[in-house]
Length: 192
Image (spheres, rainbow, N blue to C red):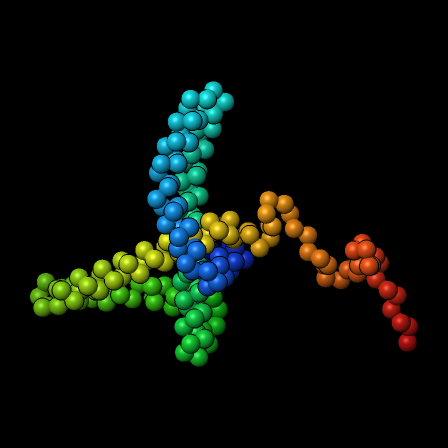
Protein backbone atom coordinates (compact mmCIF):
# COMPACT_ATOMS: atom_id res chain seq x y z
CA UNK A 1 0.00 0.00 0.00
CA UNK A 2 2.86 2.39 0.77
CA UNK A 3 4.49 1.67 -2.58
CA UNK A 4 1.21 2.39 -4.30
CA UNK A 5 0.29 5.57 -2.40
CA UNK A 6 3.60 7.09 -1.29
CA UNK A 7 6.15 6.00 -3.88
CA UNK A 8 8.27 9.18 -4.03
CA UNK A 9 8.48 9.75 -0.25
CA UNK A 10 9.35 6.07 0.14
CA UNK A 11 12.16 6.45 -2.40
CA UNK A 12 13.47 9.59 -0.66
CA UNK A 13 13.49 7.90 2.74
CA UNK A 14 15.22 4.87 1.22
CA UNK A 15 17.84 7.11 -0.35
CA UNK A 16 18.49 8.74 3.04
CA UNK A 17 18.84 5.30 4.66
CA UNK A 18 21.42 4.28 2.08
CA UNK A 19 23.18 7.65 2.16
CA UNK A 20 23.48 8.17 5.91
CA UNK A 21 22.47 5.14 8.03
CA UNK A 22 24.31 6.22 11.19
CA UNK A 23 22.69 9.63 11.34
CA UNK A 24 19.31 8.09 10.59
CA UNK A 25 19.81 5.53 13.35
CA UNK A 26 20.74 8.21 15.89
CA UNK A 27 17.74 10.33 14.92
CA UNK A 28 15.44 7.33 15.24
CA UNK A 29 16.89 6.41 18.63
CA UNK A 30 16.51 10.00 19.86
CA UNK A 31 12.91 10.03 18.67
CA UNK A 32 12.16 6.83 20.57
CA UNK A 33 13.79 8.08 23.76
CA UNK A 34 12.28 11.58 23.67
CA UNK A 35 8.78 10.78 22.41
CA UNK A 36 7.12 9.96 25.75
CA UNK A 37 8.59 12.91 27.72
CA UNK A 38 7.79 15.37 24.92
CA UNK A 39 4.29 13.95 24.60
CA UNK A 40 3.55 14.52 28.29
CA UNK A 41 5.15 17.97 28.35
CA UNK A 42 3.07 18.96 25.33
CA UNK A 43 -0.06 17.55 26.96
CA UNK A 44 0.54 19.51 30.16
CA UNK A 45 1.30 22.74 28.28
CA UNK A 46 -1.84 22.38 26.20
CA UNK A 47 -4.01 21.63 29.22
CA UNK A 48 -2.63 24.58 31.21
CA UNK A 49 -3.16 27.11 28.44
CA UNK A 50 -6.71 28.08 27.65
CA UNK A 51 -6.06 28.23 23.91
CA UNK A 52 -4.42 24.78 23.88
CA UNK A 53 -7.25 22.81 25.46
CA UNK A 54 -9.05 22.22 22.12
CA UNK A 55 -5.71 21.23 20.58
CA UNK A 56 -5.42 18.25 22.94
CA UNK A 57 -7.69 16.44 20.50
CA UNK A 58 -4.83 16.49 17.97
CA UNK A 59 -2.37 14.53 20.15
CA UNK A 60 -3.67 11.09 19.09
CA UNK A 61 -3.01 12.14 15.50
CA UNK A 62 0.61 12.84 16.46
CA UNK A 63 0.89 9.29 17.77
CA UNK A 64 -0.72 7.99 14.58
CA UNK A 65 1.72 10.03 12.48
CA UNK A 66 4.65 8.51 14.40
CA UNK A 67 3.31 4.99 13.79
CA UNK A 68 2.79 5.66 10.07
CA UNK A 69 6.26 7.21 9.92
CA UNK A 70 7.83 4.16 11.55
CA UNK A 71 6.04 1.88 9.11
CA UNK A 72 7.15 4.07 6.19
CA UNK A 73 10.74 3.88 7.45
CA UNK A 74 10.64 0.10 7.88
CA UNK A 75 9.25 -0.27 4.36
CA UNK A 76 11.98 2.00 2.97
CA UNK A 77 14.70 -0.04 4.70
CA UNK A 78 13.21 -3.29 3.38
CA UNK A 79 12.94 -1.84 -0.13
CA UNK A 80 16.59 -0.73 -0.07
CA UNK A 81 17.68 -4.16 1.19
CA UNK A 82 15.68 -5.80 -1.59
CA UNK A 83 17.34 -3.56 -4.16
CA UNK A 84 20.73 -4.34 -2.65
CA UNK A 85 20.05 -8.08 -2.94
CA UNK A 86 18.80 -7.61 -6.49
CA UNK A 87 21.99 -5.83 -7.58
CA UNK A 88 24.32 -8.00 -5.47
CA UNK A 89 23.10 -11.32 -6.83
CA UNK A 90 22.30 -10.11 -10.35
CA UNK A 91 18.58 -10.81 -10.03
CA UNK A 92 15.94 -9.04 -12.03
CA UNK A 93 12.90 -9.13 -9.77
CA UNK A 94 10.73 -6.88 -11.89
CA UNK A 95 8.39 -4.61 -9.96
CA UNK A 96 8.94 -2.98 -6.61
CA UNK A 97 6.51 -5.31 -4.82
CA UNK A 98 8.72 -8.36 -5.26
CA UNK A 99 11.80 -6.29 -4.35
CA UNK A 100 10.04 -5.21 -1.15
CA UNK A 101 9.06 -8.81 -0.41
CA UNK A 102 12.70 -9.92 -0.73
CA UNK A 103 13.76 -7.06 1.56
CA UNK A 104 11.20 -8.02 4.20
CA UNK A 105 12.37 -11.63 4.03
CA UNK A 106 15.96 -10.44 4.54
CA UNK A 107 14.99 -8.39 7.60
CA UNK A 108 12.87 -11.20 9.03
CA UNK A 109 15.16 -14.11 8.08
CA UNK A 110 16.79 -14.62 11.48
CA UNK A 111 13.41 -14.52 13.22
CA UNK A 112 11.93 -16.97 10.71
CA UNK A 113 14.86 -19.35 11.20
CA UNK A 114 14.55 -19.07 14.98
CA UNK A 115 10.82 -19.80 14.82
CA UNK A 116 11.48 -22.80 12.57
CA UNK A 117 13.85 -24.28 15.16
CA UNK A 118 11.65 -23.40 18.16
CA UNK A 119 10.01 -26.75 18.75
CA UNK A 120 9.79 -28.44 22.11
CA UNK A 121 11.01 -31.76 20.73
CA UNK A 122 14.26 -30.52 19.18
CA UNK A 123 17.56 -29.95 20.98
CA UNK A 124 18.05 -26.65 19.15
CA UNK A 125 16.54 -24.46 21.88
CA UNK A 126 19.70 -22.42 22.48
CA UNK A 127 20.29 -21.89 18.77
CA UNK A 128 16.66 -20.90 18.36
CA UNK A 129 16.95 -18.37 21.18
CA UNK A 130 20.09 -16.89 19.62
CA UNK A 131 18.40 -16.60 16.23
CA UNK A 132 15.29 -15.02 17.77
CA UNK A 133 17.43 -12.48 19.63
CA UNK A 134 19.44 -11.70 16.48
CA UNK A 135 16.18 -11.31 14.57
CA UNK A 136 14.87 -8.91 17.21
CA UNK A 137 18.05 -6.81 16.98
CA UNK A 138 17.94 -6.70 13.16
CA UNK A 139 14.26 -5.70 13.18
CA UNK A 140 14.83 -3.07 15.85
CA UNK A 141 17.71 -1.57 13.86
CA UNK A 142 15.56 -1.55 10.70
CA UNK A 143 12.68 0.19 12.48
CA UNK A 144 14.99 2.68 14.21
CA UNK A 145 17.04 3.60 11.13
CA UNK A 146 13.87 3.85 9.07
CA UNK A 147 12.14 6.11 11.60
CA UNK A 148 15.20 8.34 11.77
CA UNK A 149 15.34 8.63 7.99
CA UNK A 150 11.64 9.53 7.94
CA UNK A 151 12.20 12.27 10.49
CA UNK A 152 15.31 13.62 8.76
CA UNK A 153 13.57 13.76 5.39
CA UNK A 154 10.37 15.15 6.97
CA UNK A 155 8.28 12.16 5.90
CA UNK A 156 10.03 12.01 2.55
CA UNK A 157 9.36 15.62 1.54
CA UNK A 158 12.88 16.98 2.14
CA UNK A 159 13.91 16.69 -1.50
CA UNK A 160 11.05 19.03 -2.38
CA UNK A 161 11.46 21.47 0.51
CA UNK A 162 14.70 23.34 1.22
CA UNK A 163 14.76 24.69 4.71
CA UNK A 164 11.24 25.88 5.47
CA UNK A 165 10.64 27.58 2.11
CA UNK A 166 9.62 26.17 -1.20
CA UNK A 167 12.67 25.60 -3.38
CA UNK A 168 12.22 26.52 -7.00
CA UNK A 169 14.55 24.61 -9.31
CA UNK A 170 17.04 26.68 -11.29
CA UNK A 171 15.26 25.93 -14.52
CA UNK A 172 12.18 23.91 -15.24
CA UNK A 173 12.17 21.50 -18.16
CA UNK A 174 11.09 23.28 -21.31
CA UNK A 175 11.82 26.79 -19.98
CA UNK A 176 14.65 29.10 -20.90
CA UNK A 177 16.35 31.74 -18.79
CA UNK A 178 18.41 34.77 -19.72
CA UNK A 179 21.66 35.91 -18.10
CA UNK A 180 19.80 37.61 -15.24
CA UNK A 181 17.89 34.41 -14.38
CA UNK A 182 14.48 35.51 -15.68
CA UNK A 183 12.25 33.19 -17.69
CA UNK A 184 12.14 34.09 -21.36
CA UNK A 185 10.12 32.62 -24.22
CA UNK A 186 11.79 29.82 -26.15
CA UNK A 187 13.77 30.77 -29.22
CA UNK A 188 11.92 30.45 -32.51
CA UNK A 189 12.35 27.08 -34.15
CA UNK A 190 14.22 27.11 -37.44
CA UNK A 191 11.96 26.66 -40.40
CA UNK A 192 13.05 24.01 -42.88
